[in-house]
Image (tube, rainbow, N blue to C red):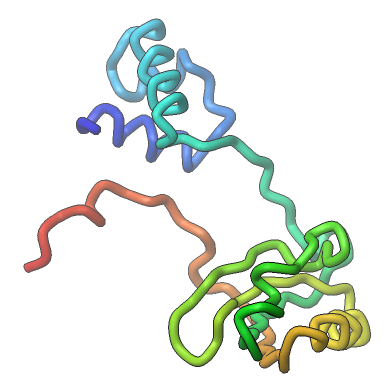
Length: 151
């Protein structure tokens, strides 16, 4: 990826609905050349999709939690068996190192709803839950500077 590709990626992360014409203007390329670069970034897997960002509180989900799960054994593990259709509260699952095997991000309407979710997850292992009180740094743009050599 060159600097122009990185500029495209950064701008699209900030606004996935930006028009090709506006994107081209901001990176000082023609619209056809910009469209070709975007297409190449999509086809190569650098850009994997575009999505709407929903405010959970606006749709009635006032609680956000981090749920850490262990694996009692390698056969019966939440990571292998969780059906997202049966657990719509869970929006992310990460395999992690350390004492836990998985970290889940979940939303719930209220404490009762969260408690119900934790009870349903108990068939795999004990859940250790942390409520997210606020998010001082929400998801931000992945920038090319992250690849700079460490000093």
